[in-house]
Image (cartoon, rainbow, N blue to C red; front, top):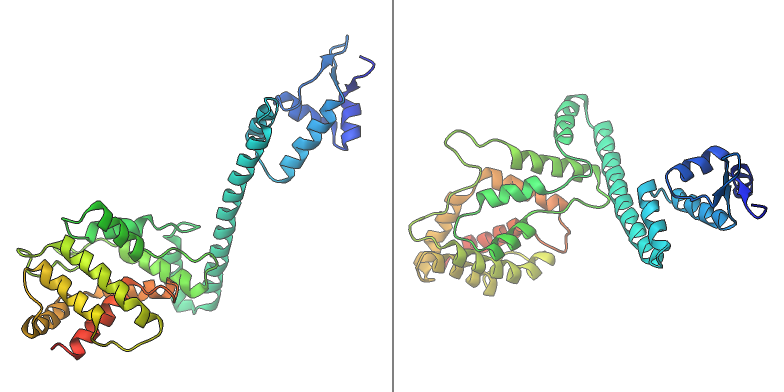
Amino acid sequence: MADLWSIGELAERAGVTVKTVRFYSDRGLLPEAARSTGGHRRYGPGALDRLRLIRSLRALDLPVPEIDRVLRREDTDTGADALEDAVARQLKELGTQLAALRWREAALQLLRDCTAEERADRLRLIGAVATPPDTTALARYWRRVLPRGLSTRQIRWIVDAAVPQPPAEPRPAQVLAFARMHALATMPCPAGGSDAPPPADARDHRPAVLYDGLGEAYELAAPALRRGGAPQPGEALDCFVAAYAGAHGDRDTPLFRRRLVRRLATLAHPVMDRYWQLAGELADPATPTLGAAHDWLRAALTADPA
């Protein structure tokens, strides 16, 4: 017992209060070595290092249950792995918190800098979006409006390409754009209506063929979009037309192209046009949106349907 410390002596050596030592002891993080004849706690020299470790982990804001896991695995020679896992989880949580703070800051700036007439509407839009925002509602919207007959692979790439990720450091305008996209994706459909255009000539429409071809055409058009090139004929446009021709069991002819110009004009939909406009405000300039690629190819076709 002469080599053991009382709770007060341990607290003094560690530079903490007796209440702190008792708190960690009661939760099993700081085992006592023995009890005095009077029932008082006694701690060995190793308790000082353990208490300092606990304090260091708490300084990193690790919760007590997480610290308990680290200490238990440390006692079984797996403490380094446990600490690494705990640090990784804490970094992930901290990243989420920082993203939420950046988003909240940009949202507050958006409200600060708008007019009194705009404030109520913007507050309603922002209030409907989680902080930090997630894209669940946007992904659900796309899965709802995509035609039947697509494979899981096709749905995955379309959703991944069509749903923009919220910027890590958003500008106020981007917060507003995302909130408006969220409102579009979650608004109820009008009675008997739809928030996306139906495919033309549904009897002959083969969506799997169409979307595979469109994906290839969009990739071919991307370099011209990135450098700001004007819409023009070429391989990308030929692939674009071939996708529609193949989906409808037709051939790429001047007559088909003229009909496709009219068909695409009929399929234009204000909700989808608005979605892609907002997506463009969130997208990386180096990665054109599917909507931008589609508009570029449609403009190229309209300018030179032959």
